[in-house]
Image 1 (cartoon, rainbow, N blue to C red):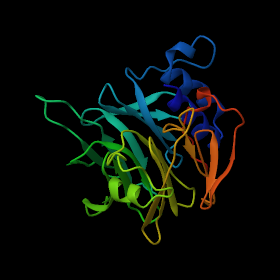
Image 2 (tube, rainbow, N blue to C red):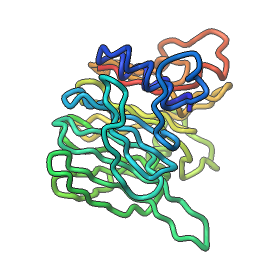
Image 3 (cartoon, one colour):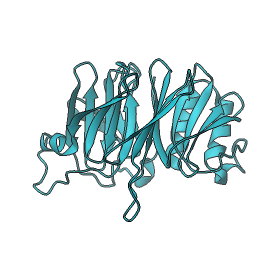
Length: 279
């Protein structure tokens, strides 16, 4: 998956482990193994990554094998595998490095029952809890308050890993209704894809979906969005932010609170890959 390869390179480069970059790129895409890096098989399809510098590992959501792979950034070996609920699709590490939150995209069609959920893993005790979600989760990121923002197809949720509680922050329909420019009357009340990232200081969380860009200010719990149309499609796979959260990159364009700052000239769809966290 190109999006995971791009994010892996950025995450590991920040840790100063270029050898680890080569190893993980090969691990997530065997097709590249012949020309770059050492092959480390994870036995499935990687859907998301989270870097834990304090432990020297990378957590990889293995979507098809229903596992979280714990990969050493020193030598690229899979140290252990954590079995979780089906289809882990995104994950995030808490600021204190105690909790790993994993979302599960289980939007199965009838007659199968939906299995949308999130799993909380306490990395200090190895304890695990799974919480059912009403709608399919699309992304998760932690703010500096220790709460995880979970984006689903129809809601924005706040998850408290200490208390194990989920609080509704807002709906996609409500945020969409307040966007500028105003959306058309037939604007969809749900989103189908999203990618989100927290700034390095954890004070802001940015997101790009198939129809809106959004910003969440952690301190005041303020959430707002901006509707957009784009050709080629702007997202939702690529998003990154600097340490202070003063701007963010989404797809091939740069934004701040005032709007569009810059963009690639004559953008092509090939630029619309990857996700990076700048700390």
